Image 1 (spheres, chains in turn orange, blue):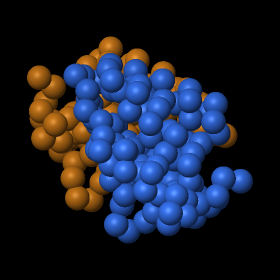
Image 2: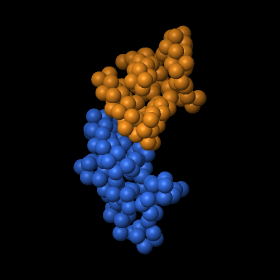
Image 3: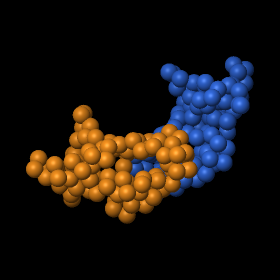
Length: 98
Length: 98
């Protein structure tokens, strides 16, 4: 099982993600970001690409879509909070959204 | 533009949908349903099929996904509430989820 990020391990992993628009939620140990695209086809294409990685890594987002927007929340339920896997999926999503 | 369902037109369109698990929300004129699948691949396969119809009909759902669950809300923003198009997409989603 992936272990929850330690206090010292969080900074180096999370700071670069905060710089690209990810936020650590106030009420739970989770990363959130809303991606905005040109239209629905672009938004759903992003979701499809991200879904393949999520399944490959067996680590799935909580996410919602309204037309051209995709709101994502990442956390590791088994670990009760953020793990390196969340950071990895967040980085992948940033890359896919470019 | 599709017109909002009239008081007399609602029953025949919405009752069959309520029978399959759709609810009219209390706080807004919208249809909601949560679909549950075996796993993430099944859930996302449903979303992909529904996305193609949504784009084809230029009528897009508000929806969220957590692993094997897909929660859908349908309404027609331009009309300020439910229209026949929402009922049509709801029926299609029921069909795709079978």
